[in-house]
Image (cartoon, rainbow, N blue to C red; front, side):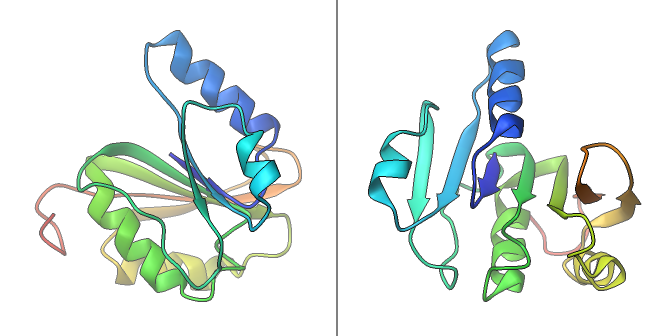
Length: 145
C-alpha cells in the first residue's frame, strides 16, 4: 500500500513490481481533486479529502505501507501510524518517504518506536531526492495486533 499526496514514478514502479508477482498495489491518495483521483491508474485506490482524516484499511491486510509525501503534512501523524500498525501483517514493513531535508529524522524514528515499530532506520540515497525511514512490525510486540 502506498499512501501519498502525489502518485508518481514510484507509484508506477510499485504497481509494475506487484503485477509481476501477481500482487496488487493499493494506493491511498490524499487529494480533494476528484478528476486527479479518477485518472489514477491502479486497480485498488482510496481517496481521502482531508489531512485530518485517516485512511481506511483492514487489520493485518498489508505486508508493507509506504507513506510518501504525506507524513509531514498530515495533521495527525499518530493516527495514521496507529492505522498502519493495525493493517500491517506481522513482520511487515513501514516506510516513510519525504522530500530530502523536510523530515525530522530523529523525531520520526522516536515516533515509530513509540508506536511499537521495531528497528527503525534512516536510509540514504535509495530514491533520489528523498529521505527514507524504515521500520518493522514484529509479531507479539506492542499493541497486540
